[in-house]
Structures are given as C-alpha cells and as structure tokens.
Amino acid sequence: MPQQINELELQNLRHMIGSHDTCIKKLETYAQQCQDPTLKQMFEKDANDAKANKQKLMSFLQ
Image 1 (cartoon, rainbow, N blue to C red):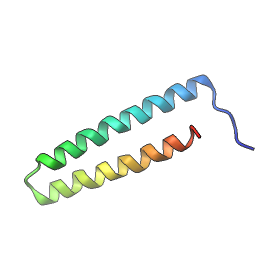
Image 2 (cartoon, one colour):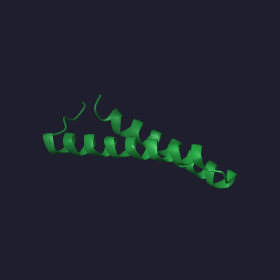
Image 3 (cartoon, rainbow, N blue to C red):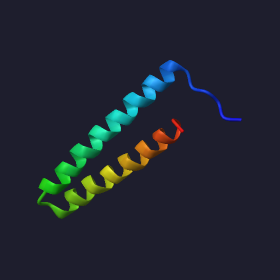
C-alpha cells in the first residue's frame, strides 16, 4: 500500500527537484563551454547523475 506524503514533504520534494534541475542546466552549460576534455567529461557525468537523482525524486510524486 503506497504511503501518502504530507504538504511539507511535497514542498521539500518540489524544492529538491527544482534545485537538481538548476544544477543540470548549469553543469550542461559548463560542459559545453569547457575546453579541457577531462573537466568536460566530469561536468557531463555530474549532469547525468543529477538527472538520475531528479528522476528518483520525481518518482515519489507518482
């Protein structure tokens, strides 16, 4: 049986999802502008990790 989340938990989830979205956009921009291949790869990996975490958080809203 799925558990209901309360209003505060919902607000916190929305805030965390928004924060991850901001991080994703920034990391993708940094990766696009980066000249160093190693640093570019790091930014891309971190952006992908943030996307995965955002998806996990969004699963709590379903």
